[in-house]
Image 1 (tube, helix red, strand yellow):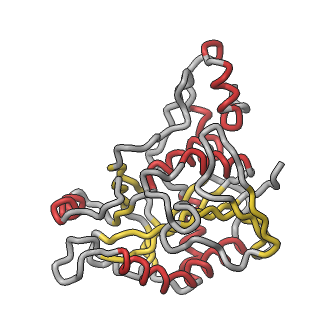
Image 2 (cartoon, rainbow, N blue to C red):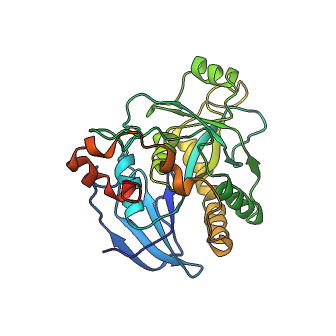
Amino acid sequence: MPEQVTLAIIGGSGLYSMPGLNQAREYTISTPFGKPSAPIVVGTLEGTRVAFLARHGIGHHITPTEVPYRANIFALKSLGVQRIISVSACGSLKEDLAPGNIVIPDQIYDNTHGRARSFFSEGLVAHISVADPFCKDTSDQLGSAVRKAGGVLHRGGALITIEGPRFSTKAESNTYRSWGMSIIGMTASPEAFLAREAEICYATMAHVTDYDVWHVSEAPVTVEMVIQTLNKNTALAQEAIRLLVRNLKPERNCDCKHALSTALITHKDVIPPATLQKLDLLVHKYL
């Protein structure tokens, strides 16, 4: 049985490893939803065991649509993870959110269409509450760490998740702006929703890499532009995570830890035994 870890970092584009993890071990974990994107690396940071998972795989070979989101979250849950910090690249849809800045959003608009969005099916139904999809307590602690690390932080805002892997057209980008979206990315959905189903607190450190394609005086987003900005911000992200781990409050004063308590609707007597066994990690304390 792998060791128990309470905090995990999911690294997105540009953050494929977590330097500074001491006494690191790799775990290859199988789940009912397949294998995670990559082996999960567990190491010691600031005296705490922390897990790291490369969302797009080693060498970035998995598209946003192909990321095994359910396997990733289920595997982290099996390690005992209670909080997830997602480190992601994003495009800015507002003038004041400049490349190099960091946004910790408080809302998501899911504009994807080709992804499995829930652990629950095959005879077991759950309607999870995600009115506030990011954990406020974890986001607040993350924001404090980013500020202490010297980052230019913007707290709050709506992150729209598009299917990808292509970038937006100008018509799409301007439409999202008219809807009031703040930033745009490709991986927050369904990751945040699955974390809530798994009763894991979830917060995003979104690194602004570009102005998408709407800004008339800026060049349209390219992969090179994204990676250049992320490379500049890597040290900032690592320092913020180190400070977060050092000062993280162990208790969870939020509703994330019992999110399923009001979500399960199927009577236990009609749930197929195979489904109960498959989802035992998530539902055993309720069923």
